Length: 166
Image 1: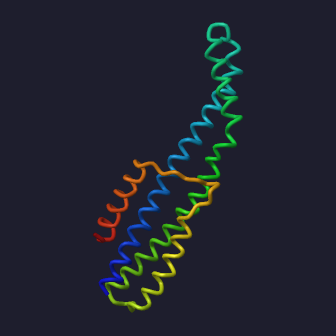
Image 2 (image 1 turned 45 degrees about the vertical axis):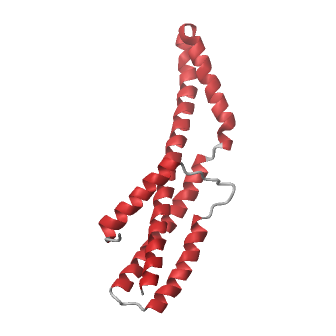
Image 3 (image 1 turned 180 degrees about the horizontal axis):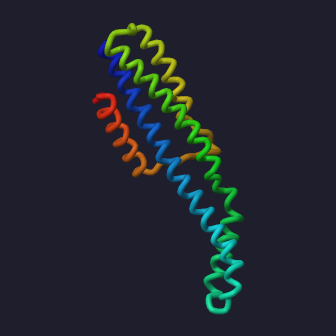
């Protein structure tokens, strides 16, 4: 029983960690997407409004317009909205898988489910979790060391405070 409990505990931590990591990446991508949209909105409306003060600040408005044109041209290379959608879907699925693992942990702790049943379910869920954590090359998510450290801290905090898993 100790071996299956340790396997389950490790899978719970890993699943929680990846859910938190995906969540942090979603927040980052949303920020980048919003920033690009704001720059483009300011540049497009600002370029029209700038005609009244063009003579005095021509160099600044010209630079802003050039920047907005560059961002517009490069925007297809940075599909933040698509990535947010993909990660949101995966994050939601990861949360559901995590909750199934927690249910198994509780069933194992209160002995309401047998060890063989837990082993079978854990094997099945581990495959689903691994599939959910795999991303196509098109997505190519890179997680920073800061995001990884934050997700590790978040996972540990949640498991200890909410589920008393140490």
